[in-house]
Length: 141
Image (tube, rainbow, N blue to C red):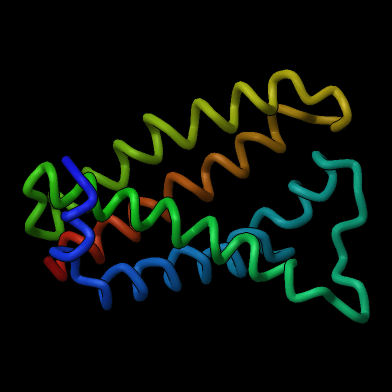
């Protein structure tokens, strides 16, 4: 693989997959989903302040874009060309990369009251988000 693959990607699919992945976070970390457990596990008050910096949204959006772009590049290199292959690609990247990174980091984060819960909720978000992104990428070859 080389960077010339960037010219072959469906950029609309990358953008839509990025937005879907990022948007999932609004649901995943909402109080009615995993928000309360995530807040307890982090030991911090994660309620949004009255005035938020744009970085609160820009950084996660940028990271979702980077990992979605990398997934799209892997999809192109592996010949992923349908929704089922896209789902599998997203799960492989989520389980094979995001899960271990979040869990090993969480295992050694003694600043959190429940570090493994904190890491598991974050890892779950990335697995589901990447599976969703992979499905979109596979569908829109």
